Length: 363
Image (cartoon, rainbow, N blue to C red; front, side, top):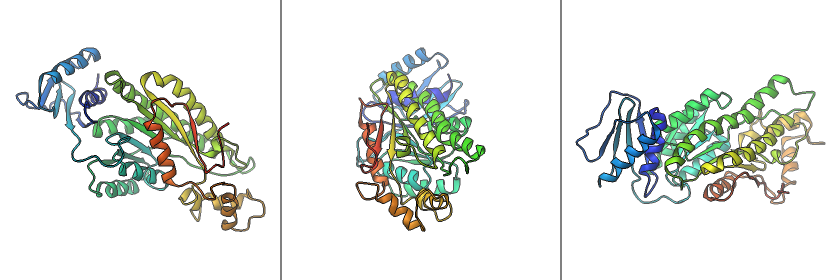
């Protein structure tokens, strides 16, 4: 076993009263002070069962909280216990949550909402400058939870694997991953070129698969030592995953497929206490996806003639607002509430949950 596999199990073994966080060093020459009550040294590291048994034996002996664990030939794990009073929301507090596409826009709003509720948040994004700015903003709030930035291209499996590994090394594990990163290029059959279709499928559909594949590996390790602990894979889908979208088939097709993945992953992973759900927001009018003056959906739909008779961006927006019984588009807080709901559940998986103001309803 490698240190990257050992860290999540150690974290869960130490998370008796509350979830701890861990930091791993891959320097095999680094050692801790074996004479200290706060340090545990483990020689057995290649057999999973013997490693877990050795850890449990060492942890049962001492009364002092373990702060450092040295794994012979692998590296050192430093442990940080929760400090201070609880933040706001016990559902996500101290949980390690990855948000892909979390640097700005809708994903950035989700990252902020979850951080405010006490989660450790991994802002995973292609844009390093904006991502680091988001992390600095969150960490400057003075809360006891942490935010980190990890560079990722969700359309590349190796990049997603590295994202998960960096999360484990810096924080200790993965309690939830929110597969939010996506792209949208509107267009009908005449306008859509194969390269654009392939790119959208790679990011929106395959990217979700990569997130589930690599995150679930860590979640399974956690479940082996803490079978009472539930973890979550959450896809940010769309109302376009519930109903076809005119001149927007590449996006809708990927989202329809995403719900198929959600239902299939849910069946496979629930025995490991891993829940898999999709959140299907309605129109997020306030974000750059819709409102960007150059490439936003209002502009794209106007140019594509998707809204008959529309002469301006305002006409397009009014057209979509009229379709929503609630009279407005979806907001970040609406989706954050749905995310907290599915994390809080222990008996709900494989669902596609609409957050559409009544525009789309489950059948």
